[in-house]
Length: 219
Image (cartoon, rainbow, N blue to C red; front, side, top):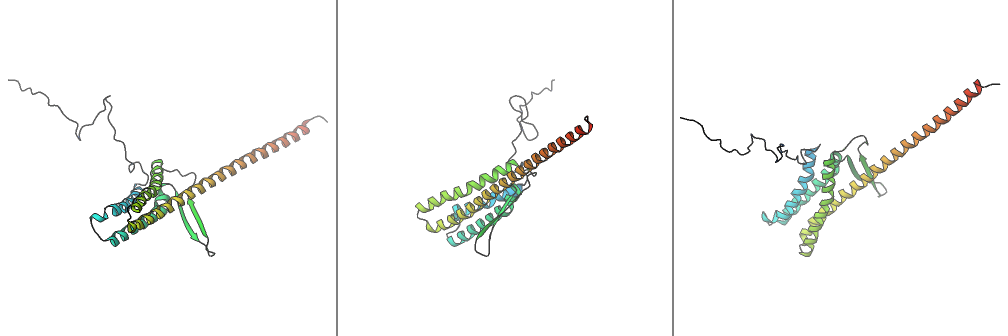
């Protein structure tokens, strides 16, 4: 008596490798945290902004106490502002800025930037600048909604969020511009020094050749 049993069709599971229609194994695309050089900094770049938005949009579902929501939102926005200004930018794009008030009352912008030889993760840079531009835009839309809905007390939260996010955006734009100017100056100085050395060397070689020619010439 035969013990033959027909083979049961199998479906791809965790222990089987899925294949593409062409017979090649499929590869899952890595997410932005997997390709990031500083995934923790990237996480906090997004986390505090998301928390502030969640508190603003969903706070009323959990409590009717506006003062509590206001305080939590402002604290989250302040922590996000400090984190982006001092940590996220330095790790993700190699930039840092701050503003100091001089004794005469004038403001002085101070910038720090990475060395030109130090590279930046392209994924980190793209996410950082996208989030930096998008944040004031999102809060600006919420400000318009709050204004036309006559929710003046909620508009206070949005105004604070717009001011803080816009301050970070302006600060990093200035810092990035300062970095590019310094790099251009370094490149121009290096180019000028190289050309000067070439001219000096050419002139020195010409003088030496003339002297040797006269030394070995007739008369």
